Image (cartoon, rainbow, N blue to C red; front, top):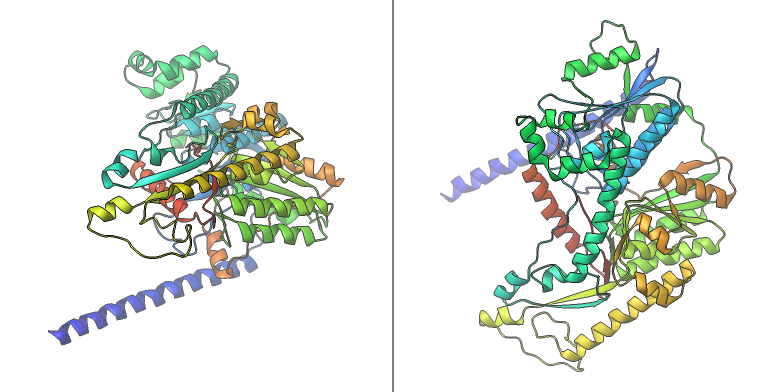
Length: 601
């Protein structure tokens, strides 16, 4: 029997080892093919006779590709991403390119990314229209984000069997207090700011009145903006839009249960088209009389390669550093903001003589207080060295993300950016009761009152709890002082608009927390103005990634090529997985955090 098991294990290991070798060889072969293709093929070119720029964003809109060190690029669970700055650059170049005759937008594969990112992409497409070139959009179906983006087009098409789902905005949170009570786990929450709600899910069973009030005000403001922008683009009376959203069942009944007809009768859709009709229409608009069933087009990623190859580099550079994800201590790969690794990027940009100005592109809910200060200090040193620093807020630049922004000369934000959340909290879980229930006891000796005081197996000493609250209060006051100095305000004035409250970018401008409404292009223009640059090249420095892993990441990256959207079940699993991964990154040595519970789909 032992020999049989041993033989089976040997065969199993041989199979695993063989599979590993095959996978490695396939990867190596793919790299060789890619290198040869890059040498032999001159690169993508824009079709002659005028072409359509084909924009099909897929997966999640991100500021920078996230990095998966496990090399699990072939997994079906790998989230597809579209890099927003690349897509904006392609659309901006196409606006002034006589070879591009129209823009074709297909939204079915886009999944998420934050309202501000969709707004910035929408604004870029709207700017493209100023060239007089048409924009045509189509969806097999439209969810809210997809339709918000598509509504900017001159003509919006829907599959005859499709729908337009406009639900409004919501934020619902899972509260763990009941479950923790049943388990006997006691969570101690220390915070400064009554609107700082991040720890409430662990200490409450429902939303606090402060959180409810602030969230309602925020969502109402954001939804009002979406409503007005869509109504303006579609030339609708806002009340007509409201009727579709609030009385959808009535609209559906009137349309005899056909959601596509309901959308068209509400003025949200111009025409119905199947896939073949859609392609035929674009060929007609291009004046393409070729026998080829497809139309003259170039995908956004290929077009960007062609544009960059044709444009000479300028020795004057503006470096854009992307702070995307949670802010944590130490070294972190792209997708999280490591205090040490991001500070190193700032130092390298500061010491690079070709870099004349720095733009910090922030898309972060915050995180470690210590890491946030390490980064802010490096930005302050960069300004002292004579290089302008501009903060550009993406979808989210709150709490620790705002602490970083306070290190800049100027702050730009999108109208729908979520920012502020100026507050501090700390959480300490206590497991003494569950251990007691299991018959486990903890005993020992200590040389001082604080020795072993933060052991979660033991009840938290009231003296230690008071000390922790005092420490949280101190960091909060420091936060107020930093913002007050950066924004030229009094600390008391900052406190009135702080206390952990989240504001939209538009509101933040009126409160003095942000200087200007604008996206990355506006921030770059601001940096160039401060650095007195008439021409410049934009660079996007990233942390060093092993070459093979970087190549594989680029092979599977996208600027705007579509693929199927994830299923609802996989979306839920990914969200829960992301939440747990985020918690696992929390490593502030003092357990003090500046994080915003304000992310929305």
